[in-house]
Length: 234
Picture 1 (cartoon, rainbow, N blue to C red):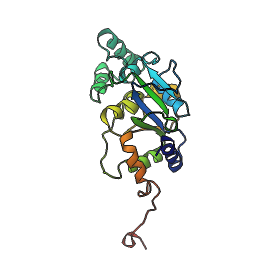
Picture 2: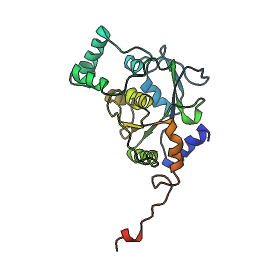
Picture 3: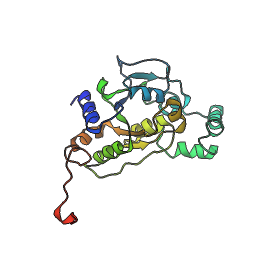
Picture 4: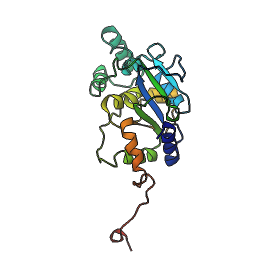
């Protein structure tokens, strides 16, 4: 099944408002995509509306995103002190440098030196195999997708709800192999203007085929719910 066919199944089955996005960490050449100064969270927003982006160390303008997604080494010394000060006194997203450190140390490792570039594109435009699919969806759509994702194995994935949007929506799934649900961080949501009901659902690409295969069998997909006679009320 082609990437375009997969995208069409997702959009048709779940009536998605935004494009399901293919995200790939790669060292290979990619021919299509905007290569310009941008933040990863902005690229996510625009890719969900049909744009494609190729991002590397040269064009990633967010110091945090560059660190989380592996273009720069984790900060230490004076650089880390500036980040701590910014997050606790500027953005005011954590109460202290201790809680900031907990947030970064209790999750998966950053994607340090994983790849030269990240490709963020609508799934239907993907040129290379995605590492994950990112959905911008509402609660009902997320519920259906999660139900289908766990239909075959019944295993609840470990979640990373908090942290920078690029970390919780991309890096967690890339580094852990887990499907993840996050609302992102408040700064990214407000600055990029994501709609109030948007939830970010990240699915490792290796789980996508089974998710799609579950659609005709699961009531969260196309299957009709059948209530046995003994469960029906008079």
